[in-house]
Amino acid sequence: MQTSHFAVRVLGLKAAQCSAPAPRHHLTPQNAASPAFKALRQGRCLQGRAVQPRSTRNKPVAYTKATLASTMELPTWEELSDLAVGTSTGQRISEQQALRAQGGGLPHTDAKLRLFGHSEDEVRLTLYRDHAAWCPYCQKVWMMIEEKQIPCKIEKINMRSYGDKPDWFLQKVPSGLLPVIELDNKMITESLVIMQILEAEFPDRPMIPSDPRSLDRVNNLLQLE
Image (cartoon, rainbow, N blue to C red; front, top):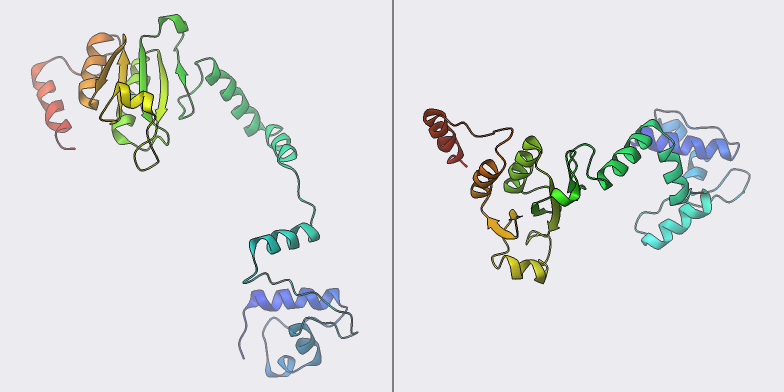
């Protein structure tokens, strides 16, 4: 008969709780046939005190939750949140969340406003991108906006694999494709077209080379995708 070290340790713990001798780490024919080992396998103690089986295999989720709740006291979500915020990492996260709400902070997928030191009244651009920051076409437009520090608002739209797109977005963009920018109330699609327009409208911090030879190389590389 073979058993794992984990099982033997669990059985050893049960034996200690019942004041019975703990089985050895390596199972042998001698201790496998011992009364202590048989009693533990049957979920009882040598003194006759019942031991409730702890296995929740093949039990409903509700049964498992009830069993856990009856054996340990779990902290509430509010208590866990307070503990997390109290750490240095939690404090940094809270600071970044506060900055994001004002259009500042580090680049983050949760950001809905990026100002780069400008006022919200100066924002001409809205970027429509996917919720999960998964779409590579949205990502390259997003990176260009960050590198050029263009003030913008961000709206998150479902990709078709995530769910339905909102009707108001389909009224603006019947194809539903992402990414899309709205610049001065004009809707523009196709990531490469968007990047060219951003470069022309916001020439500070240039991202595309101006000399013909380098520009040809850029266009050749862009065609590889």
